[in-house]
Image (cartoon, rainbow, N blue to C red; front, top):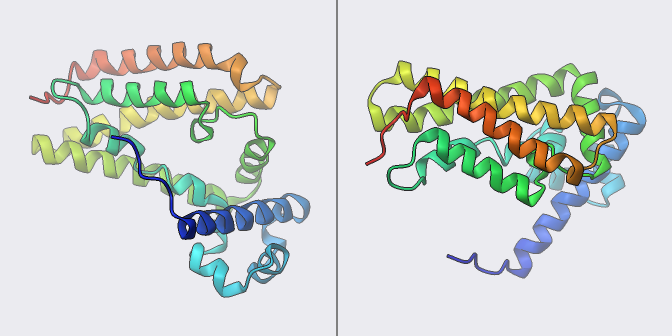
Length: 213
């Protein structure tokens, strides 16, 4: 089903959020995350400090908001998968669609801001901790979906960790290649092949878990 066109108000909200994010990233890159205040971000983005907090809960969230939007991707793929489709197949299908779209959320974008963000994550412990929280939250959400279907929380957690680890390993390789100077188009075919191998490896262990009938 086609998505409904975005209304004017929603477009303006997204434009404001994007402006705040880009402004914050520029300031953080220039001066360092810890040396920039929310008030300074607001002034540079031409909004009030309260507006920044209305869009983003904390200074860390200002930068990592786009990442947080994808925390539930794996869980959504499994929850809405086709009848007879395994969790592995659902997440693989979603990931390959993102490869085709050159989706920044999997590290497949030529936007230089992606590399700047990755560097800030490496250099800033507070941001690294927040990113780790998102990863753990994604595993938890996926485990919730699997546990609802199977009634086995332990196995659901094991499967969720394996699936997210396979996906994140491919994303990490994408970031490594971006840093090395490869373009998203150059990487796409290799990324798809690597994702196929990674999920195939997980699938051999999970063997169609869980059945979706």
